Length: 215
Image 1 (tube, helix red, strand yellow):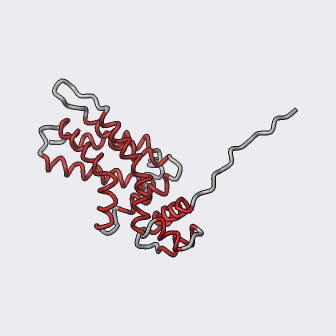
Image 2 (cartoon, rainbow, N blue to C red):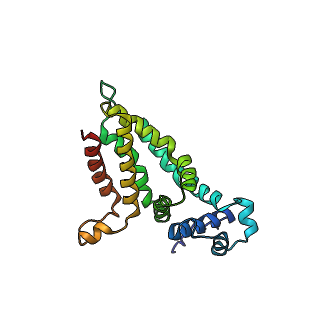
Image 3 (cartoon, rainbow, N blue to C red):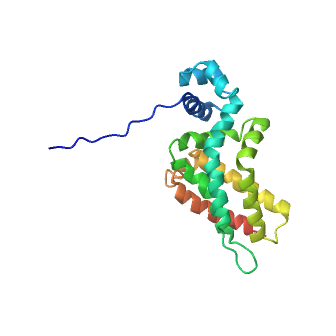
């Protein structure tokens, strides 16, 4: 007698989850200012009263998206950075610090819904400074400062401002890589595939380490 397979029923999304799912996709496609509250409510199938009840504003919706998406990235960074090994001089290996900082962001692209957040993270770099700082500072400042401190220990000969400039370029490379704009695919006639995050991670670590070690 054939056994019937039982599938675990899919839990329907709650009202806040539907709002966040729609907002994340719309924000990733058109940016924060390019999406109205009405479009979010229409897309999610809820009324405006429900959105205001659960979140209050469009920025609050964005902050909640980043709380849910960015928190695991930041926590994973902090974990990896706290596990760094140090030599007798108290110095970690530059590549280890870079990998601990970059890996959680790049690997998040392979998670469910990762594509939408990948594009949203890239778009946020071009949003108004007030919005950009409010969201990114809250989400990533702690883990980014921890990475900076580890790099300062790895490269004590670098002046603080020089280290900060190089970290600025590292973050730019990370966000651009996450955005996957397709430019190098076009220029290389698809010999390079930036969607392979593990390959991109190792290439970026090697490139960035050389930049941090430069005189």
